Image (cartoon, rainbow, N blue to C red; front, side):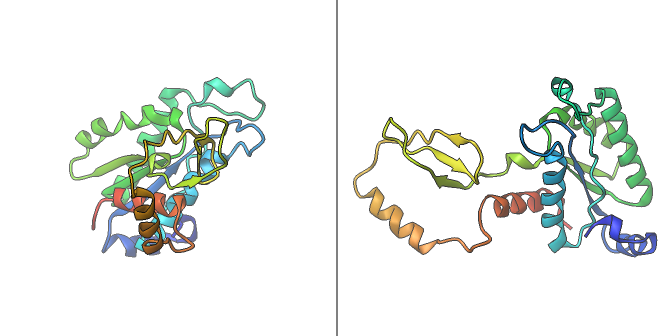
Length: 209
């Protein structure tokens, strides 16, 4: 559930039985022909989809990050590292004052990594509060076969992302038949895939109740 769809009384009632919260972090930067908001859109999407079944509130996404290497592209907005760290610190201070004690920062942009270095220091200053910094894009990948290349090997595509060389090992006799039987016995449901795997990993990242 999104905190923007709750009033303060509902948050107060939630904090009587749970103290978890999720804060997505993204950036506004060029992504070739895609939206400049790719990183903030995806970090919020996976946060909401993972937290909703658990009833954990998701706070508004921090839409700007550290991205100086793309400032030549119109529309890119970059914070200074000290600004990013100060922003994250202020958000954590506010959540802690409200009564949240287990907080997950879901990061969607690699340049925001310096904000993660703040957490150990911050937790030392706030005993009893646990904060985790989770890069959602590091979730397990679900591989899909793509078209064969000139080497005779089949590259793989990760949920429609850039091709990755499969570098398949030399086949073991009988392995192909065994793999076919395994695939037939474990055919995923339609909703399974890279997004579902990422949601499961994000839920595991949330501190247990």
